[in-house]
Image (cartoon, rainbow, N blue to C red; front, side, top):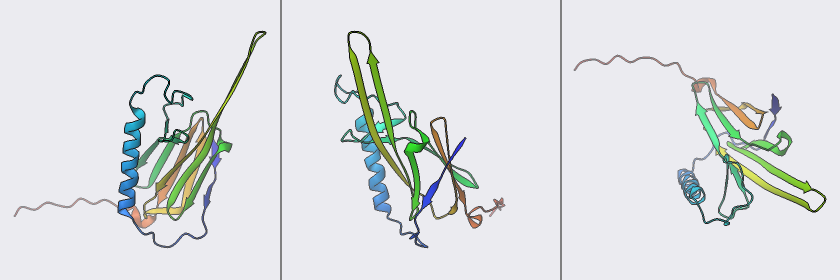
Length: 173
């Protein structure tokens, strides 16, 4: 399993301002993009290149965005991105001001030759996906691993965020 390095910005402030409306706008944009791109289209429209289902195209059709799985447990948040056909050297993970960014490029080349014809085709697609990490994450304890086309990022929580659970007795009135 290969380990991917996470670059950190030196100008990370101590506290991050929360813009709830920007987060809502981003989420609504994602919802409408999915609605627009996942419904069947007329044959021939935006048919090439056919990217694997783990990717989706944005409105302009020129940017490929990987789908993410995000899971949280008591000690960490785990983010997984399926990047079929992408090599580790073509992926970068950065953290700046609480924003985790996954960038990369998918390259595909096809060539066919025989005695009567020669066919060569290349397609390229850049992708970028950003995720705001909560304040409970310890930014010094992030790890990224890339194995068989799957990028797995583990973000450990700060010790004070990992609190013991206790049962509270319910009394009769």
